[in-house]
Amino acid sequence: MNKFVPTMFALATAMPAFAIDSIPLDQLRPGLWKVERKIEKLDLTPVEYETRNSEYCADPKKELTRTLKAMSFLCKTNVTKLADNRYQAQARCNLGAISGSNTTIIAIASPDQYSAEVDTSGIKFGEKQHRKEQVTAVRTGDCKE
Image (cartoon, rainbow, N blue to C red):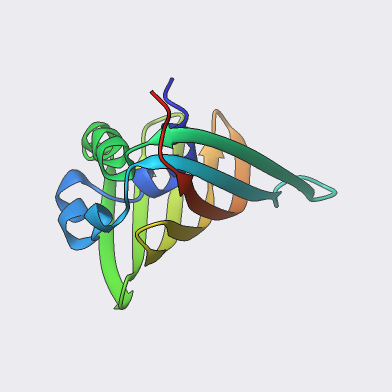
């Protein structure tokens, strides 16, 4: 599995393919990306915290578009521009054993940096889940092929 897909999964589940046009993902340059994900598992007692760091080569627009095409048929969505280069995507999904809602706010700071705030809650195979994530991604250079 491509490493970029899990990093952007929450964002992808929040937007159908046509909504990608409203977010200027083409501003993000392909290259070597360092990504930090801070995750709060709010459904657990006590609440669990996790930080995941990764670094990999990616073309953010290409990878996200591929994921969005697959997810576009699964959720009812709404994308709103909040400010310059700041977008909110909301989704409501019902996939039988998995259902819930997601709100993602993505901010593109520059061609080499973006962040996302993700709030997802719902039910997965009968178990309630609630997660919040802070994603920070910085392009650190060109890929060595």
